[in-house]
Structures are given as structure tokens and as C-alpha cells.
Image (cartoon, rainbow, N blue to C red; front, side, top):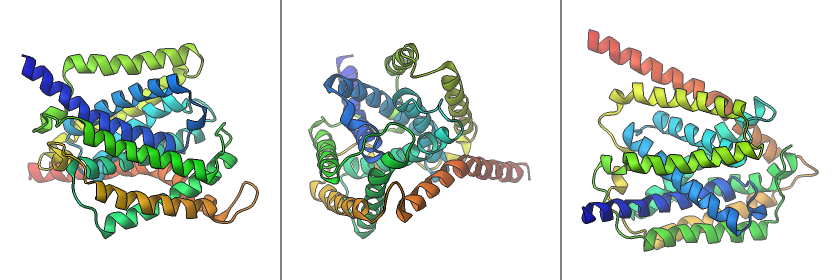
Length: 328
């Protein structure tokens, strides 16, 4: 009994490291309001992101999300929950407020955190492809941090590039340190990533309590909860009904069991990311407009509008083809 409990607790160390990455990517990469939080609020955010990490890893394992389409659906669920509980932006200026961050920036932040978790928890070396990806993401981050606060109608604080780079450097190094210090997790099978009923009650309680507090304070409305719940429910149903199509692959296989990180590989990614971020932030522009920000925000808006209908269509066609083959 004691050994089983200890094994479950070590599994939460892996979830903690993923939660730290979600916090960094969702709060500092997708620059929200990190300069306005006090110590107590950061503690509350850490608990929320840990709960979100546990839920998302469970969904990936439970529905065997292993291709880009199923992973996008999990990312979409994350984006909606994040926007509802933390950003509080799904109820203002609909439908535009639903697109930019809930269905675009935050899902992409989730996928970035998941890819970073794969690097850290697999202990693998990084190569030229990873280096190029880090450069590209860093460039986009620099443009976002520079221009989103001045172009958005939301109350997003502006920040100089120096403090932003320092905050992100500390956050990314802290993620590696957490992954290095947590005990080896007793996670050897796909089922070990799934939450037990008691664990679901705990993480569900954290998220429900956050929703109740937000609703009481007027940040979250019943209409906003209903809208986010409707979309997230559709994504969960889609994942469930298409599970038989994904029996042969498992995305988290490379981090099962989670391993200690490769510090050199992580630093090799951080350096080009921060350098490209500085370049993206320093690109020229005037007032509240620049060519690079117009291009970025237009691309994000288009992605937020297109990806869910496109994924639904592709999955539907795949299911129809598979059904036709089985009947034939």
C-alpha cells in the first residue's frame, strides 16, 4: 500500500515539471500579465497550472493523442480552460476574443510546452532541426511581446526586452532544474499517466474552485463558462469517438518513464531562442503598427479560425474511410 502511494506521488513530480513549462509558455512566452502578479497570485497560478498539466497528460494518455490532429484537440481544450480560468477573455468582444488567444496563441503555447517536456523528460540530445525551431519560435515571441500589448484592446502591460529576456531565462532554467530535482517517476505504461478517481477529484476541485472564485468576482460569466464548456465538450467527444483510429502509437512513449534532462541540449535551445527573441523585439515599427506584427497577428487569427473546422473535417473523412474499409 505504501509503495503504491509512493509510486503515485513520484508521478506527480513529472506532472509538476510539465506544469512549470505550461506556466512559462502560457504566462511569459504568450505574454499575459506576469508583471502584475504578487507572490500569492503566483502560488495560485502554480496550483492551477499543475492541475492543468495533470488533466492534459491524462487526456493525451486516455485518448492516445498521438498525431497532430488529436494533439491539436487536446491543445484546444487547454486553450479554452486557460482563457476561461486565467485570462478571463472568452466573454468579451465575441467572437474575436475567442480566437486570438483561446484558440490560437494558448493552444500553440501548449504544444510548445509539450515539445519542451519531450526534450527535458526524454533526456535526448538536440540537433539542427531543434535549433532552427528555437530560432523561429524566439523570433515570433519577440514580435509578440513587443507589439501585442500596444495593439490589443485588452489591458496587457508593455515590457522592455531586457526584463522580458531575464524573466524568460530564469523561467526556462527553473523548468530544467525542477525536471532534474524531482524523483524518478514510477511511470512505465500509458495508463500510469492517467489520473485515479481520487486524483481527478483533487484537480477537478482546484479548477472548479478557480471557476467559482472567478464567477464570484465577475471575471467569469455563466455564458463564458457555457461557451467554453460546449467547445471543449465537442473536442472531448471527438477524441473519444476517434480513439480506435489511434491504437498503434503513443506520443508520450519517449518520456515513459521520464528521465533526467540533458542540460547541454536544453541550453543549446535557450540561447538561440533568447537571441532570436531580442531580434524580433528590435525589428523596426512605428506607433502601434509594424509589418511583422501585422503578419504575425493575421497568421494567428487565421490559424484560430481555421484549425478546428479543418481538424474536424480531416478526422471525419478518416473515420468515414476506415468505416468503409471495414464494411468492405
